[in-house]
Image 1: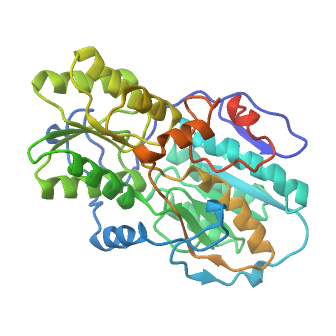
Image 2: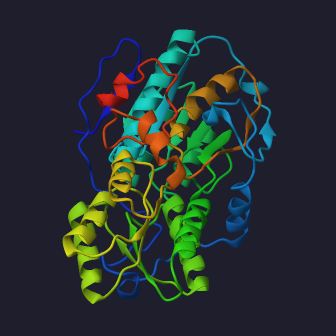
Image 3: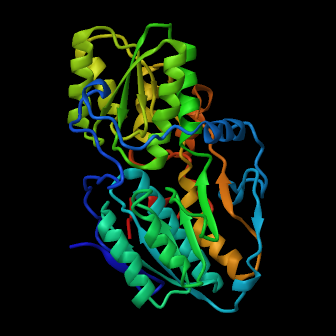
Length: 403
């Protein structure tokens, strides 16, 4: 059964949702099979956008505004919007249409969001957060949003879209209610929400990672790119940026969709190693990073130069092996920001229309710092989760208590 629940001070925890496969955006023609890009059908959407590439490239060096030590409330180059029309007293009910909690990044964020909710319930800002989990289905999430519009008795909407194009009309219907709509994580093709919250973005990730690999490799070296799924803007943009830079630098890059399946990742790497030297591994998400490293160990060859993510399993394997690595970050602390934004909106405070959060990779010089700060956390935890000041820290995250 699909999870539908109300998160409130009166409701107990639900069982962990099992990992589910991801669906693609119906507006995108997906590759025909999980093989290299040279053997698959090209997507029907052109994901590279030079203006957005340039914007995110510049934002990487901007010092964010906002309170020190609270990156989840910081913002970059914001255009603030007036929210005085929504100012109202009393605790408000939120309705959250979530794409899923089907991977460790989303599970970590979901835990953090619920701990933030407890703090806001205690302060009287939010009464409850009714949540419907779409389990990675566009059709389900569209139905969830329409349910909230018609039946949810909501004071505000929070939407983390499953995919970009398919979810846009449903988000617009939520906006048409006149209630505040907050979109975060993945984008949609409308500017009707009061605020769209996200880290700098996929192009910034792609630039950070590709430049790192290029700086540590030679022209003509081969990189294997491991991608989890097509059709999601932040993922497609990561690869679009990296592919551009690899091409310009003369790096041979082949890409594969893996579904974040460790068995598939090992097979892909093993097959590529059988063809010849693989000098670099690029990933658009850290799931399965350890499996990729283990494929090199199984083959008895030198470790690659590699980019993973700030998931603890990768950081620990990176430290253990001493490989040349970088942990790009798609700031997990963003899961706190939508509820804090709702509090600000109902207080009539200005919020950024596009709320761009800081997004800084973990470098080799910082690995020990983040390993120490997250000692005792499970492998699926994300180092830059930003919840250290919340009520359940550290136990809730250590025990992986997923509502």
